[in-house]
Image 1: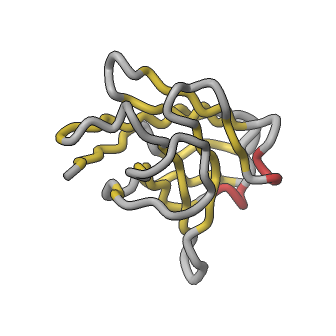
Image 2 (image 1 turned 135 degrees about the horizontal axis):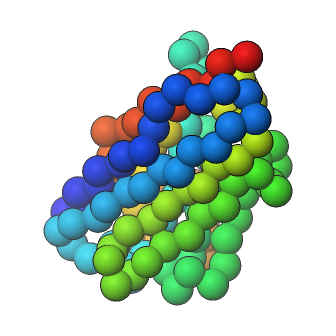
Length: 123
């Protein structure tokens, strides 16, 4: 089992920045890829960003490339998502996830999820 707790969400104006953090506990997440997903009201959950188990390779949704940066600290068992130049369409509940297979920065197949943190970008 892996427990994930997100923090750092909030309300920000268009063009602003937020940093999301996710702390993992339980079965060690440092050996596996970690990712961020989001879900807006009335929409399906979608992939945002992922980092491989070593923190060396990353993968992003096209619409956030150049604006979002994912990183991990395996010593602290955490993953972060730095979000800049935020847009109203980035508003959603953001979820941290761990995939307990493979090492690559996968866009799917995640096994454990946090409870989510709300990000709201006002226009």
